[in-house]
Length: 605
Image (tube, rainbow, N blue to C red; front, side, top):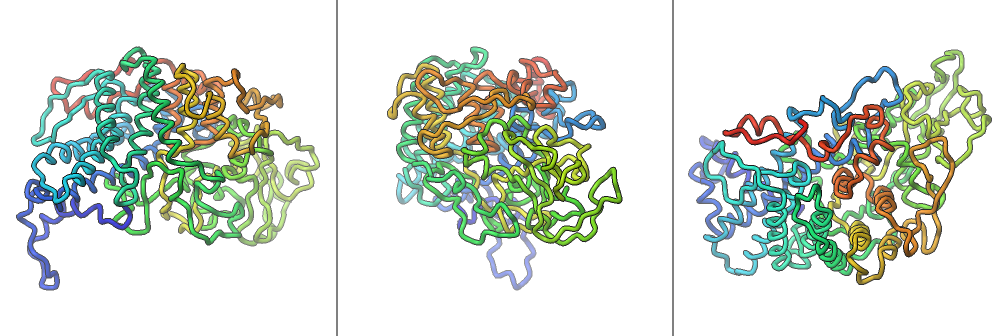
């Protein structure tokens, strides 16, 4: 809803009260007598209340993006520095050790955002009973939107923490009484909300960005899929959930066709930042089921909870153009790279770099000088070795994992003939590598051109749900016993996603042992009847959905988090502390301290 002032309700309630004593040039009526009850007592106020339920989806994404609750500490994302002996410890989300405690402000922030959304949607759902609409059907849709957003919030909560408090009424007065509700009851409520929402929501919304029937169907598919796995026999799931998940996924697939080319799902740009792409972006396309919206309008792209505005996905992932010699990449052309989420070396080896178009889109295999640098000191160990760069020259090259690099193809500082440094996959993130300390290829999946260097933020919508994922959920449900779907067996759904990336019938090869950087043994990742496994689906999900806000929960759902993180994540392997109690996060200490009697902590924390 980019053109709607979604903050009007918030501004009136929380700022407008302080607007007494206005100067003559503010020719507006005083709103000092406006209260929550009076403002949302009619159709106009209620419309603004429902609009105000949407901004917090940006805060969910922002905090996940920044603190990486859903990304770091998994098999495909980590933090840098694992090969540097000077780095002793990083984020608890990587280490899974005694530093991972209930005192984490990151977890507390995420918890608070989700319950803030629940409080707002509870208000909308409960107060709707006293609101009269000129068109009652419109009111029904707005209630359904609130139920969808409430269900989304509870789904993140129950997956992350297990048993959680489940208020379903508007909060009128403060209370210290908090009760954790069993996970199975939370799932029952989520499914109730989503089923009612799906029945009432339109296929096409009145304003782009509102929840739709397809969004509810997608979330129902994922909720039933998750409940079917029945984590610790605590979710109330049965085998029937997999069949239900498949049915809902089939509905999404039938309504939201895949985009022809993977790269068109994300910001369009040239891999060489000196050749800027200036055409229109494509954040609204047939594959998007539900998106978190951003725009250049300050009223519609800032967060309520986070300090910074806009989409920061363009700068969160590693590596970094800033590490190029002499800041040769430190301009708005490469933009700022915070590198808080680094692709594990194993992740690159899950792709066929020659056949899989997603590899070419997601990673930058060469970095370029963005300005001239005459007589630059090229080597840390040999100050006399100098080279001159002209704007546009290659400064660093990252050959694909399946390429053999002979000595003559190395850089001058490595005893080769090239004036750029060549960094192979076994050297990614190594702080001892020549002048380019710790440099890794840019994970450029979300990079958007034309963003101001520094605190510039993107405007590209983030597709939280898209039908590409629905195909993989369907394949997973079939593999778990759902029976064939509308398109056929699990391999059919899996290969539909793969075919877009590699071509119909093409046989791509990935590393058979992605965690072993010395192994060049390969294996096909095309599915045929009878060969598909959960690990193959998770590998394909990694290739297709890398960085799309879901990895930790996907691994937890399928019971693969501990195994795959220990095998493929250098920090998790180094720490070797992850165990079963880490499959739920610690209840924030701030919540325990505020409750009376104090609510219980998850075991092991």
